[in-house]
Image (tube, rainbow, N blue to C red; front, side):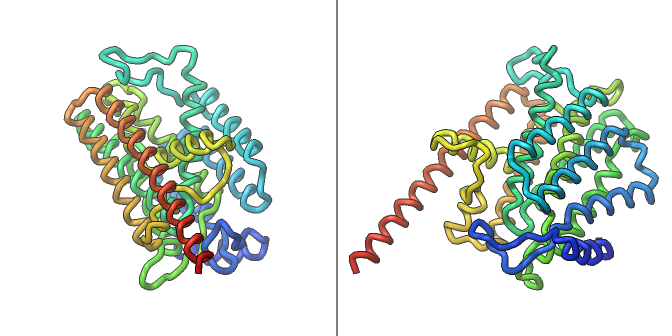
Length: 353
């Protein structure tokens, strides 16, 4: 990454692949949107060097490449939201139907018996895949946030894969992508050196762009689904646990869509009312906001894995997740309302003077 990022940045500026400041953004000057390209190339290079590229099937590489390409195209020539969504659905449809990368049930989220998907297996898998990709994409609103949340999810997936190995009494598996995921974690960490704020970096020098967020969203979705697929002699992670590993992006996306729908807006309407905007409106710095949300996601992932390992029923785990989502949605909506009322009173005070 230390070599790829400067080269990719220079190329991005040359071809106009940069992010310009506007009223919805906080950065100053043009920032190259090359982080996704750099992570993608670094990841492939790591897989070749480590010899672990065979752990992923062809449909994985096709899907990841398509997601990166769609995102980069959107970064350079902004696409209508519906067109981008259509491209995503078609890509995931090809990965799911041609590659057979699906889980046949949702586990015991509705009680003791497994909830079989039957003929709905492909539509529900596509919906979950596309939803996660867009959740990661929407989290890319503060320097270091999307990369930090993706890093937590990838570390959590690695823990799950190692636990499944231990359950099977094996030190390694020829088809297990744990080592490959660790390589991607390193790539994300290298990206954050240029993107996250620190005492030595007051503003990101590169952004991952839609290409990067959609690429990472796809990989995380593929890995979560991989962990939920039953394999003889290995076992699987309960599907409900995957919700905990990406709890912050999912909560933010679902609560925003609910709020927009209540307001009579399109669920895909862009605004500055995400959770990171809320924390900043309450006075937290960008660095503190990112650290808080990454820590919350790490705590949620640890809690979800603990519920699984302690053999708490999947139904209880799912109900707990839904309860927290409801509380989160109510709290964020109330907070925005209070902030709006405070801003209104401030404007009235200024006019009275």
